[in-house]
Amino acid sequence: MKSKLFFLSFLITILNFSCTDDITDMGSGIQPAGDKIVVYADAFYPSSENYFINSFTSRPDSFLLGTYYDKKFGTTHADIFAQVQPPLGFSYPKGSVADSAYILLYYTSWFGNKYAPMEVSIYEMNKSTFEYTKPYPSDINPADYCDMSLLLKKRIFSAKDAVLIRKDPTLIQFKLSDDFVKRRFAAVMKTTYTKNTDFLNFFKGLYITTDFGSASMLYINQIDMKYYFNYKYATGNGTDSTTVNSYVTYPANPEVRQVNRIYHPDKDLIRQKLDSRPEVTFVSSPANVYTRVKLPLKSMKEKMNVGSKKLTINSVLSKFYVEDFTEDTVDHKIVNKLMMIKESAFNRFFSKKELPSDTCAIIGSFTYEKDNANLLSYYYSFDLAKFIAAEFKTSTTNNTVLPDNMNLLLVPVSVSYDSSGKILEVKQQNLMNSVTLCSGKHPTKPIRLNVVYSGF
View: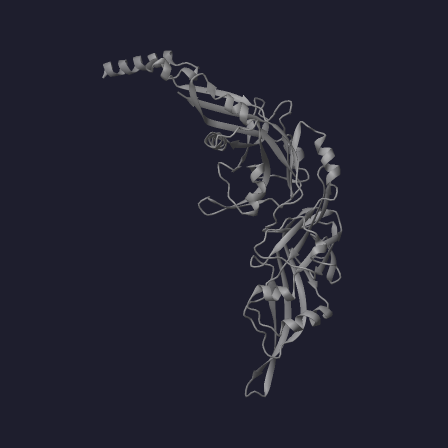
């Protein structure tokens, strides 16, 4: 036993003396010089800039409604176009009489000043409506769908009542006029709809917008139109009857289309202001500004040529530091998820509802680190190894010239997962989120790519 312990101690001592910090020589003692394993590390510093967008493909789970202004990102105005679905196959009881009609807006939360008044107006879409399978941008023109001649209702309220408390504080009701009930409801009651398109040819939808207020916005998660009616129900031997009061709901649900229109009226002024700070870039949703990163592909490829060695990429880790976490969270919630995507694939990815892949788009992780003074630094990190390796392979396979740079975009997204954590869907973020990132010109925390190559 003593001899085994002595041998083990001797072996550990020998290994300690033979270890070295030069990782590129690892394994050289048992290989011929020509077969030596090479592990090579390098750092690259990509450039970055603001990338302003006019719209995104609108497929919201919830709708932003209202107007909000802040000095950093300017004015965001949001309104809603919504088709509603009839109860397919439903027939109103014989002798039904129209009573009233309401539009109900339910909201989960709000952004900005909850006590700030806002005026919401609801119009009937009377010029055109949406095709179910067609993607629609968030900068659609209201004049293409509504001439604003059929005002259904308007109302002034605040996200949270300061004095009178509503029975349901997450619901705003709009009672429609008797004229609307007679003009629309009477015809609807005579028809049994078996297809959504038949009803939409008759009632194209709702245009919901705000007329004043610039300090709050609502996150609308449900829109319903309700028709109330009554009818007589015969009882006994048929000589008596009772009145039945009922209603039918026409919801704005996934079976029909809704579009969240987003508008930034002072974008040109804000562009000049944000571009005046080259040491940082910005990400702001919805449909405002993203960050473009120029990846130095050609330089990275040239570093792989080390004599006669054939190197491959093992790791490409990147960090995008938040410039001032405290400042960024004053007016907006900070962006939770950033996706890095090829600029050339940007429009196709979202319009065709694609999912992230290592060769096109990557979801980053948001985390933090502590320095020697125990101060926190927040950052988004990405591993681009497979992404870049695929670009090199494509260039070699197709015998094409590798560009000096490849443009990537940092896009704020919302991500849906299944129970096992698999990504089901990725959408451009339509909530009021933002972040200020250190750019490639930042004096202390510029964008950095840490690349590790290896080969024989």
